[in-house]
Length: 390
Image 1: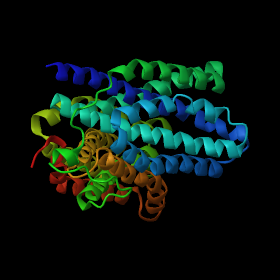
Image 2: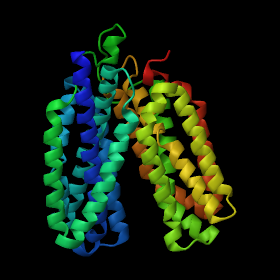
Image 3: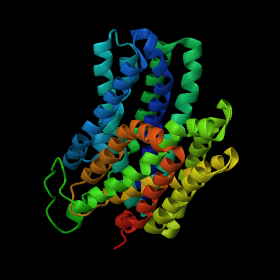
């Protein structure tokens, strides 16, 4: 009973960590356009800087996984949750372009390490509680992003970039310090040990084919999200004749549906299991993208993107839980690898999708992405370890 009580407190603590991480990323978004005039750069240079941020995140994720294998997810999460507190001011106060580039790589690396650690800790809480909490944890990340973007934009307009960044750092510190004491550490967190053997040495690149299949599933689940974010508005404008304000509804409806479904996702998964939840979610997402792809008019396309958001919402949380419970791997290694593959695809996807859509059109592009989600549905059994199914 005491153990479950501790796990319940840990569940609230890790939710706060997801909220803090999303809050920083949300507050960062309205700062991005201000980098252009401040440093006298154009969109192409800004694009390279953002790629640097992403590469920093992806490059650091495997390091985080190895560190979790040595000292545990709770300690790593404590370390990197504190480390993200100053990252936004460091970027905003960067005096020149070289310093800015280094600061953005550092920001990506630290946030990426925290990302892996908080997902690994969420898996430990799931073990302690004996039920799923990953989907709602990701829901708190989305909520943090919404709050950070909304309040961050208002603070930016009223007090300026420097004050906004400093205020975000202060609020993030409060959230992190409040959550740290209650973070949970499951007494048996190493899947290799649980499998009855000696913990496997922490390899930088795990030699586990099934783990890389989970990584592919994460990639196929995350790319459609980026495709809706970056290109849905243009699709509605160019091919369906939507106005600019109406076109922007595509990602808004998609994101809103995804956030709502993430908070409901744990209940669904606890009732139906990881495999059925993943399969049904992927098929729903595929149906939504297919509907958007063949829609003759804007309203049906918007309905399709909303349905896609409902389906995509719980794919990554289920896959991450499966990776965190992967047998025969040091703790943290599974989530680190799958997170890296998923986010690496997000780095490549926006530009690739834009090029492909220019050649074959958005309709066919979204149709192909629907097929990617059907692949995830077909591979759903690979996520059985998310809730201990054999």
